[in-house]
Length: 433
Image 1: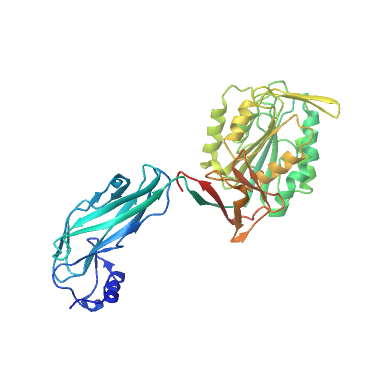
Image 2: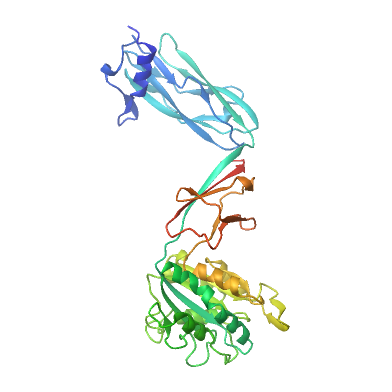
């Protein structure tokens, strides 16, 4: 007796898998039996939505034996002028016992624009239908896609912040600008309750008492320090008695290496804390070790480059900078090696010739506290008005799109909290989604 259409569909819906990759059901789950080997292919037609040229999408096709005797199936073939656009991952004959099935993946990868029509040809020992053609239909072109990038906001509990301050004779005004904006820098640590150690070294690697040694008293500042902001501001004003060889990167390495780590700087550096380095100088690095040496040092120090941030308030790359601040000339030589190191890690670059350090110190504070405000997208949106940002499932509107960085940048008064789930959905135009 032939089963009803509903019964046959019930068979297909209840199919399971055995270790051979074939699918089986019990006889009692079938509303009846068809005599002999009987083939059924689901779906009867395969249709693919529009994809970009040379992009791929796929779907499953199931070949089943809904009869009472063994079904022998030949190797499927692809036919038609656009058969080259399709592929099936079944390259063997099948022997299906009654109520067994096998799934195969059909992939559509169009090689040209327009409609693509082909057929999946399947032969078997089904007496009624020994040859079966399954129509394949797809469309290709530079279609529009909705992309979604997902991010998780950092949740940093402890940070070691090391200021590397140029103490040469020209640096008094710049030291004062940093000290004057310490409250702006500090606000993020207060707001987040971060466990911090903050210390200051100079770029001087010659004089005793410098060469990577923490300056001021106490040697470093913590949440338990009395008036921590004022203490840090005073420490940043390290003076201008450098011997004339500014080597901030070399001093940084000395400060975070033995014998300093367990000697003069004991207690400052913590293995389990995020490390933030802030460099202020109007001179180039003069240690001649090369920026790659110091990038490797910092990466190896933590084992994870994301556990380090570097910010640099230095001269502009290649040509340095010149300017006037309140009628006073300012200038700096190129800080190329400092910028190399800064760009290797999260952090901020600011030209030291800027007359206003407040924006830079705010951005440095955000980065030093471990907060991420800029989230680069994996593709370029084709319609900025349709970018949607959600934070923990709620639509968030306090952000801007940075075209140069192709990134969503949150406003400083609405930065997502630590561990927040951030999703950015936006439209893009082909070739692939």
